[in-house]
Length: 386
Image 1 (tube, rainbow, N blue to C red):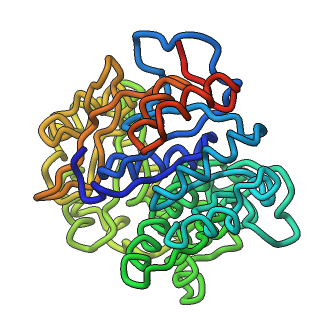
Image 2: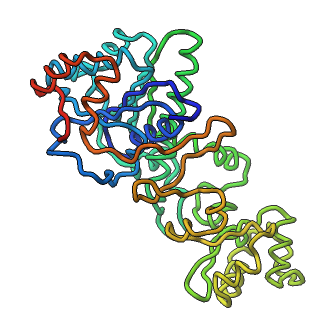
Image 3: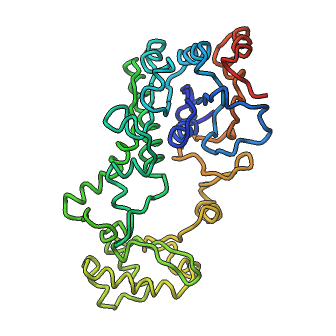
């Protein structure tokens, strides 16, 4: 492995969405992350091809039965050799399994115990089920996505699950690892998607309390599609372009390249009363040319312009190709690790693993005696694919 987290060992208790995303981020940065699956998930030999879930990349996979006493003992043995553990169960589940923070920190006082939930470890909603749409709703974010006169529009599940959840868990774990390297003591990191999403809204709290964002309305503000100079527009071929000409000099460039520089109606850029009509007129103008034609006019200028690309198109754009933004590993196209580092460059050196594919290998590498491994496999406390 390479990357700035090389040398750190992290246990990931298998889950879905934000937990695996956080584990991927940590593994991409060089940490040795092992994903612990349920023993019951192993149903035969591991296929020769990678698992299709790209979120599993860059780490080995072991299967442990955490309802088996020896399975619990095995996980706690691994905890002794780990720097961090991350999990995404509802509050109390890890404690009922006998591998909660108290048990784990008793075995390894330097351990960082990272927890990922939607609502947090406490509060009236803590034990309720939920999904991204619910977390961003309660955090005060979802109400502000959408166009004027339309209901709130959920922005896929990137804001709560991945932005407010997985990224904050990875950030919190790294912060706690840094602190543990100085204090010699571990701690629990309580990551809640509702908290992370609320934090992502910080700038809009500033704008709202400064009179720059009307939180009582959607689609009428500077950054929520209210402004004619900050929106997407349909082109003659049914494709779209994005415009973000906020600053006066960038707006002037937009006016110049659209041929509107001398139109008095567009002179008062920040007059909100005129935005709806100016948006309509810009929409008509952009519909007269194809997306490629607008790219010829506006790419590499200071308009703050980019074509709106689908995932498959993004992989073929010259800018993304030159930077290596997307890569193919094990036959799977995927985003490359980010951010970039000048000296400890992260890499993808393991395609996504199957359930239990590396059980025996990991236990051996983490110092478990061979005879003990044989006993664990025989008892069903752990399971090896194949």
